[in-house]
Image (cartoon, rainbow, N blue to C red):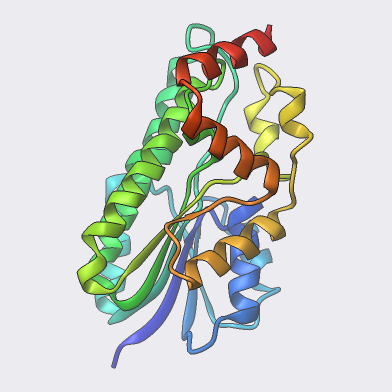
Length: 256
């Protein structure tokens, strides 16, 4: 007998934690919610707030052996994944020439490679009506001087998600790319380690619950992309109209 589950990566804090809480509050017909992050204690604290059965998976998804472990567990438990939320990721502000190499390649490994690996691992266990939610960013809309690698990784996530959505149409599996602007989470504690973001960006700051609520609604409606708040929707529109060379020059000028 199959087990209906939800999988959330990056569940120990920020948007991933908010996904866990909102899915727990609203999703029915779920046997377990699998929470994935490196910090088991934070996962345990989160699970204590949830009404659904949870499975805590303390793992580093950038390690291939951990992805193999996840695949084995899904197979052994006869799982059927109703929803996959890929929320694990991080960003660091600063110029490419100034940031440490391992910080930049680490973003690529987690934001791109690990997201792809988890998605591929889960696909055989998904069925018609399943949903995949991928955390991209409004930084994916245009190249971001001073945030180059992070923006590039999120452009990958958005492009990957939109293409995957078309590949999975015949199976009735729907993919939604979530592209918020700045969100009031611990993200900036890491991101601003070497530099600060544009002040104008922080004027568009929104709460995690708003982003997640919009994302779940858009996923339910089978929308390809979820963009929270009017300012970020306007930014998306501008990026579709104006030349990206002009926009990136403006961004660089504003950063001084």
